Image (cartoon, rainbow over the protein chains, first blue to last red):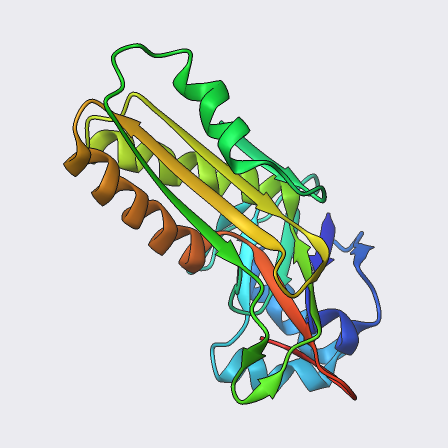
Length: 81
Length: 134
């Protein structure tokens, strides 16, 4: 699966995107655990519910199953317009 | 119509290009958002707008479709820019085309509200000596 990072999240991860090939990441909650263990500075933002998650370009709030072809995006609140 | 682009645009021309397709349109309401020179008491030099393009198209289509279900819209237009934009630059244009003014006024307001809430764009604001994500 592909993980994309936007805005200041990229300053923490140092990547725009990364490809994950793990059999252990079966759902969004698994992925959240993965990213905060890889990027501990994201933990406080996850805890404060600042991080937004999208799966295949749709906002996802609840835990859903993930497939290997999914595109997951992690980003802060939007500020366009 | 939805356009997500780096380039500036001519609002009159863009609105006219849609208006001329519909002789039954009697009302057009437009909102234009610009980069202003001051935000949170800091002098803004420019902004860099980042976008998640694939998702932005999807979310804007969804917002337009919801607006269509609430008001009698004949057509609609959203142009949102990204990249480096200096003070005075246009950021966004939303135009709503309908028979009567109420539908165009209210739908334009609705689309802007939801664009600001859901469309995946992020502003990085540049001041004289630093920059900040909004």
